[in-house]
Length: 138
Image 1: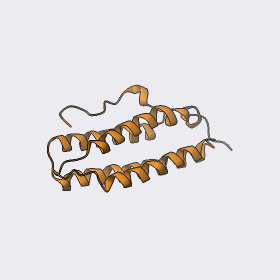
Image 2: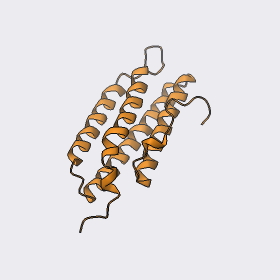
Image 3: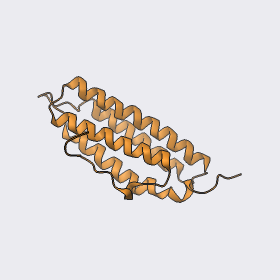
């Protein structure tokens, strides 16, 4: 992807699990793609396709992350699940109004995605780093 990145991935975002780190990096790439597509004046169809890709991939990531956290007995799994549910609900709400009357993409959705993912990764997801790198119980 060329152009200016909306979100620059930093090593400090890593949680220490190869699959989850790859998921997080890919989500950032898709959000950057949405930003690039939006700033290039893409059609609503193209923007909608990218938004659907973010939505589908986020849901897949949440499922995988929750399975991993359940397997290691992470004590704050319910907090993660609630945060994930809140994210899905907010994105569903924003999707209903993310196009401007002029045909462009609302900056609100881009800012929400950027802020939510970066905050979630560096706060909630970083908290489980010590748990996911321990041997599985039993």
